[in-house]
Amino acid sequence: MARESAPACSPASAPASGRRAAEAGREARDPAGAGRAAAGFASRSDAGGKGRVCDCLVLGAGASGLAFALRLCELGRSCIVLDHAREPGRKLSLAGGGRANFTSAQLAEAAYLCRTPAFVPPVLDAFSAMGMVRLVEELGLPWEKRPGGKYFLKTEAGALVRALLSRIRQTGLAEIQLERSFGPGDVEVTARGARVRTREGGRFEARHLAVALGSPACPASGATGLGYALAQRLGHAVLAPEAALAPLLLPEGSPLLGLQGISLPARLDVEGVDGKRHSFTDDLLFTHQGISGPCVLKASLFWKRGTALALNLLPGLDASDLLGDESAGRGTPRSLLARHLPQKLCDALLPGELAKRRAAEIKKSVRREILERFTKFTFVPRGIAGLRQAEVCRGGVDCAEVEPLAFFSRLNPRVSFVGEVLDVTGLLGGFNLHWAFASGWLAAEALARSLAS
Ligand SMILES: Cc1cc2nc3c(=O)[nH]c(=O)nc-3n(C[C@H](O)[C@H](O)[C@H](O)COP(=O)(O)OP(=O)(O)OC[C@H]3O[C@@H](n4cnc5c(N)ncnc54)[C@H](O)[C@@H]3O)c2cc1C
Image (cartoon, rainbow, N blue to C red; front, side, top):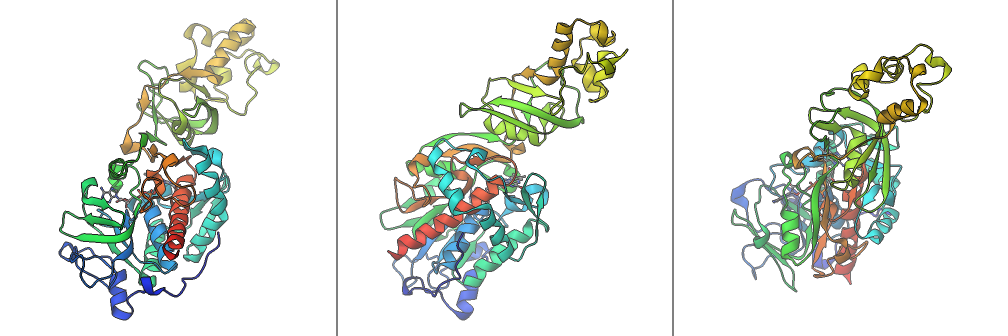
């Protein structure tokens, strides 16, 4: 990723300097200030008045919206960011258990689910994992690489939000307006630009609109489905949004119910909504109603409702002769399996009448069947836990209607879509924050180029 220092502002986007620039960068939390003209380029309720219309309205002050705003301002363009939350970047502050797993050394197309396959690879080429690491470094934040190639902050994730805000402020070209409510009907896009009317009485207009409203996953973070509703109002197709990176619910009567609290490494094979088979080996946690943990969350991204998953509770172990080799001695299936698995789990899956017989006395074919209950346990989940427990939503704005790499709407070039609102969903492990930053960053560069031409 080539990073440039902020160029001198062009006359069309020259920032207000000095005190006014500082005002422009300050987050406006005071509802009384809504709609107030600020810093020359900013919001105005006096359409046609003296204030110059700013370059872009950014809807959403989350990961992608802040990355977009920073890059746009670095390139000398002005923006106003609107968000209904009291503080920006709430979901980003919660990410990675509060340490934000912000990218991955395993960055690859295969880590993403997107119904337009050609959409993702050029973005990953243009904004690499190392590019993301450099951005974090340039923001002055310490990071660490954890097993599996996962990059985490060494400081709390809120520091990333604060660093982004501080850099945005330094440009003097952005205004961040919090606690601003608006619905799809409050946003108007014409051939000349975009206008947003907020319920607090503010009116904002700009030459361009960037939709960075995320998905409704994790409503406690302030997430809503407004991005989808707005996209539809603007004529875009939205591909069936569904909770993902979430626990799976076990079917009624499953022998695996009642094992809550047990955690172990496992492998899940899943038939994907993309028509491919996926396999994940990682930790699995039994819960009251189902299964969770990284292994399950990853599988949930691809799982197609109504299809069976195959669970291997002995991954990495050649289990073929576990019950029949010489070391089995006088052991029973129950005692032999309990060398590798919690006793309670063994008891849940072992057929009672065979569990306590000497393994050596059980027919080979029956021994194989017993083992398969532990290595190929198939079941059809009752469903996926809801949005409250989900980290992301799969589905979203159809990427076939969005310009690859530039992120302009193909239906209306005055609009861009960035971040999770798009039909691009990554696996657990830093892929979603990477996408949010990469799409926001590259979309801002594309807009700056287009405004200059
Ligand atoms: C608990 C949790 C942990 C996660 N951990 C990680 C992780 O470690 N690594 C990783 O890669 N991914 C992680 N993710 C996923 C990642 O955080 C998201 O994919 C990413 O934040 C999406 O960025 P975004 O900018 O598209 O949306 P968001 O960051 O959600 O930003 C959207 C913004 O729009 C605003 N908004 C929404 N609705 C409205 C409305 N009606 N009016 C006005 N404003 C609105 C919101 O307030 C928000 O500021 C995690 C998700 C969760 C829920």
